[in-house]
Length: 337
Image (cartoon, helix red, strand yellow):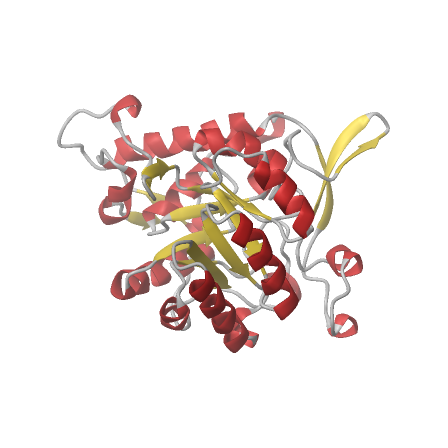
């Protein structure tokens, strides 16, 4: 079997039954008693912040908050927010992490999602399932996401434990080098396609996490069956990011992976001497604003609907046809920027 990534395919246009414009297609999905856009800002230290959330919530875009906030910092920031439904609080599976997350959410139980996130679900399935069950028991009304996985094998167990969303993607993130340093993973497009089929069977939703470089990649992930798409690298140069440093008068965003040596050095992590570096530590020149990048992505989603002939983004996966190609775009002018 050949596994494919976003760069390996294009979406074939198809004739629309009725005239469509970008203005009259709907790219919002149902969310609680309202709607959201199918975009998630990842829980990276530089992007999964309350500062980013201030800009994303009015745009109906989710922010998955990173785990480095203290309990008090969570509470201070959450108290200042009028709408917390587009916020996901991220937790690991260790008892101390679960306890602190329960303390935060017990006070602010109107957050949208609890994001149970560990580096290697395959090595600690029991821990993941136990954490999901604890959160489901404490907060039966709050949605739970769990991950990451890259095939269908564990999906049913996670959903039976109480997960509403399963995050799909291993080694596909922009700051992740697991695929090169460990040799593990499944190309993201094929991973989403496989997990979407299983999600249809067991009745859950999936979040495609990683692998997107352009708005076209986000469109392909949704066309493959993702209900939402998580991004970090695409917004990692924005002035709204944290970890901003100045070097010779130029501002940079320090983006580092959750499996990077820098992350290990910040936190006391067991078995540190046995771990390889699985994350990049990058200085990215700061430019642009996150709102403009999100609007570009949303514009791409509107356009792909018109090309495929659907009036709602939720119809995209059932109407899109992928074709395998040797080259996805014309690179003749790339040297000019």
